[in-house]
Amino acid sequence: MVGQRGIRTGSKGVPVRYEAIDAALGLVADKALELGASVHLPRIGCGLAGGKWSRIEPLIMERLVARGISVTVYDHDG
Figure 1 (cartoon, helix red, strand yellow):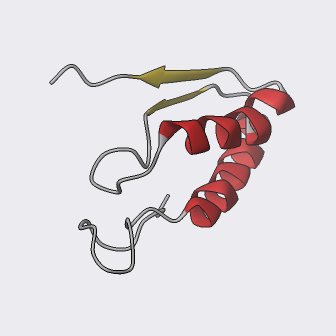
Figure 2: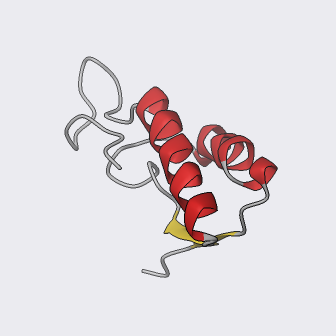
Figure 3: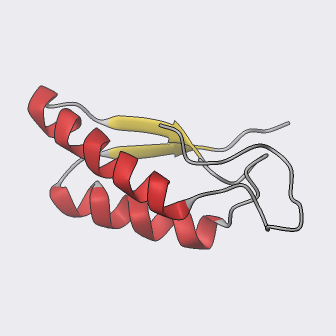
């Protein structure tokens, strides 16, 4: 999944690209359903990409959880 452009916030805003994350989650969901897999991920888009979890979580809920895919999100303790 590529959901950001660069790693620094500048005059054009944060690097996160929510629409790219949304599209990629849709593809991940298709593959997870095909394989009968669960999805495990960190809080994508919220580190160097500068995104907000409040915008990412609903995408995960809509694209994955609503389709019956088990999702585990890990927090980094660092």
